[in-house]
Picture: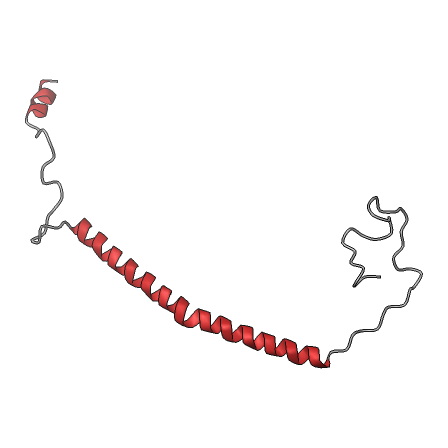
Length: 113
């Protein structure tokens, strides 16, 4: 026990100079952190430029191409013929509890029969 007490009395009261400081007065941790921040800024700047100068024009060009293809296709497209009223289509064993009971919830009278 005495050995323990004697050992405590010789220990320093605070940790002074616990980290190694380099010649410039900056620790290796701070230098690494600054390098990481510089790299992050450069990378963010790169991806911002890629987004503005590559992605947006590519989006505009692909939208224009899709619009051109839509106009080409709709110019020669013919509408399909109506399906005949077969007896096995649109069977209702029990009416729907909304509307007139014969049409589904998402029935569109302009498109559906």
